[in-house]
Amino acid sequence: MKLINLKNKAIASDYVAIELLKLIQDNPKAILGLATGNTMTDIYPRFSELLEANDTDLSEVQTFNLDEYVGLEPEHSQSYHTYMHKLLFDHNSSWQASNIHIPQGKVDDLEAESKRYEEYLKSIGNPDIQLLGIGENGHIGFNEPGTSFESETRVVDLTDSTVKANSVNFDKIEDVPKQAVSMGLKSIMRANRIILIAFGERKQEAIRRLLEGETTEDLPASILHNHPNVEIIIDDTIYNNLK
Ligand code: F6R
Image 1 (cartoon, rainbow, N blue to C red):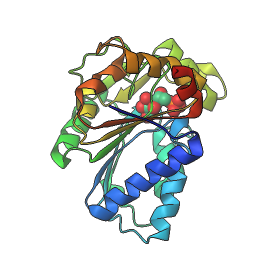
Image 2: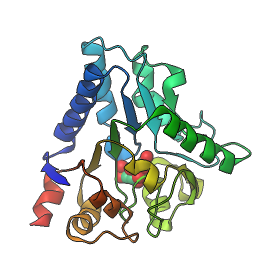
Image 3: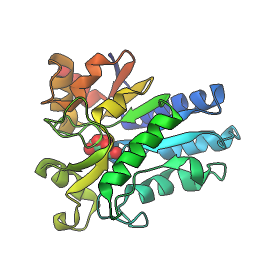
Image 4: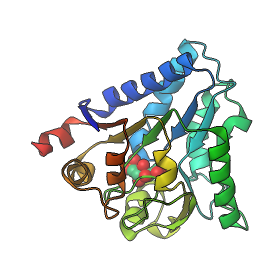
């Protein structure tokens, strides 16, 4: 596990965007594992600019998102479908709708949808790069503390702290969905390379525990100790508090 301080969100977002671009330039059939949330908001616009500047062919690139809220239509303003389209997919006409994969959060049979998503992910192949944010409680995807390291895509209950953290993007806390369809820890670990990104004071304790601590289901991100190719990108705030 490599720890890299990239000082601030702007530099870190540039770095991640460049890594994604290089991957696609090396392999036009690359598979990207994408995350949402406030940590990623500068990465996708930057990545879009670089794709445009290089006239990059995206026609064979596949993307998978980690999760979607249960109960939100794809068109809902706070769905992760909308987030991804607004920040990334709507900015380059070379993205192919059929290669963009995000779980459906509003279907009759969520269990079948979770299974379908996991099987599809497996059939396409392992993501070349998986981006991850981290929750204040150490979740990755929406795999909350106590999640089995063997977990695959399924419906999960969000903890109160996650609902509260996510409420910044909703008018009121009652509007925040309490469940999500999320890739599991085992699904995430299949990626060939993992880049976890964390900024600011709120994430400092989770990163400290991740770097110092044992591998335990109490801290879902600690499963990454078992992966051979992980970068943890942090900013000055977190770095200076680790000393
Ligand atoms: C989002 C996801 C979550 C977030 C995490 C951090 O797709 O899977 O694990 O990465 O909750 O969220 P932000 O970046 O909003 O602090």
